[in-house]
Image 1: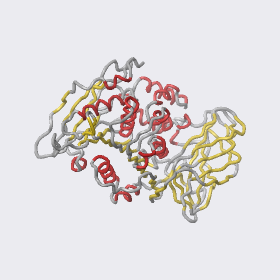
Image 2: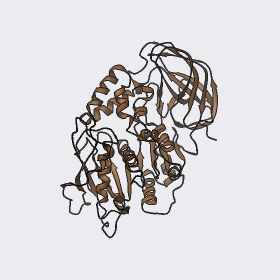
Image 3: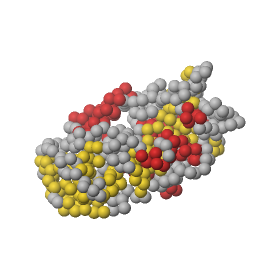
Image 4: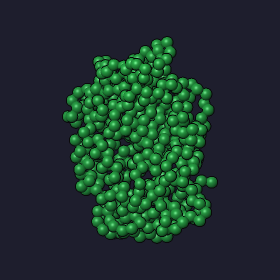
Length: 502
């Protein structure tokens, strides 16, 4: 139970503890290791402030007379901060300081993980920014306002959004000048349990990886979800505030450049999460200065049932930077934090790697072309996937597709799993970029009109191949969370809208 006001997040900026000395010698200089007290809202597990521990990497040439911007960095879920000497040398050589953070509940930091809650991790990021602003070698936009960027992926992308949005919520602005979140989320509820169907493969791995950091709410909710196959109301409430989606609901958008890099074959935080961040969480002005990169990677477990495919790589970063993502990220920050000439191109567009390895750059990812399909009947709870032909190649799609149908459910809490696949026939067709989404009918219903979102993908269908709609009663990504009773799902008056390119 929270007992203090969220305004307390800015109350404590003193009392910083030096945890370890700077390393010396011929090797790259080690960081200052510092623990910063953070005042967050309290609950029964955390009755007071906790220490948030960081490693501060200062460029050799930085000083009070030669101030430099700083990049915050943090780890993925279950990880810890980076503190080894030389870890961020490419950033230091480029003229940036780096501060790597142990997030609440991980590494040397105290407390329990509230999974990027504005009242907890949001407060922690603000405390770190306050500390960075106190360093005399850090460049500033104004008093207590450092020139600031952020890097990191997954949970290390989530802290960037929670920090920026929490500041925006409390003060009407954020001190971040640019962000570069990778493979992160827009909504944790949509990601962990789309249509309230638990993404079993990933929730099990994540729960185990953060076992010691969980609150009692997560322990109880995980057990309930695994037992019932439903996303518990307690989990939906716990995660509701913990992503950009919550802030967008409240009318907030970020007005700073963002470099979004998302795994198109990521089946924990799929491509649609980055598209929502790009389309909904940024102002129009910010989006014109931002980039969205889709690549084949990230949280990418292979789909076996139904089987999926994707060629790993990052063709779009290579094309935009002439090298790869590391170079693209450095140039993005050089342009936005150091004032380097704006030479990167492709701002305001979606740059999506296909399952085969090509890069498509498009201005829109919305569906544009409609295809009619025959009636579809699928069993629920058990059975094999079906492949229903949509169109023959050559065909290129990039973005989010939608299925429209009159749906009849012959069973209670019926579930089916949908995807797009490519092959020379229904026999060899494979799911594009390993992404499947569930559709759920909670009660018996006759002919209800439904719009079912399909996974966001990029794909080229060659001459002699076809694009298929895959409909399966089961998915290994949602193992044990298929239909709760045997039955069938019938789809009539079926059509698919595709984001066709060209």
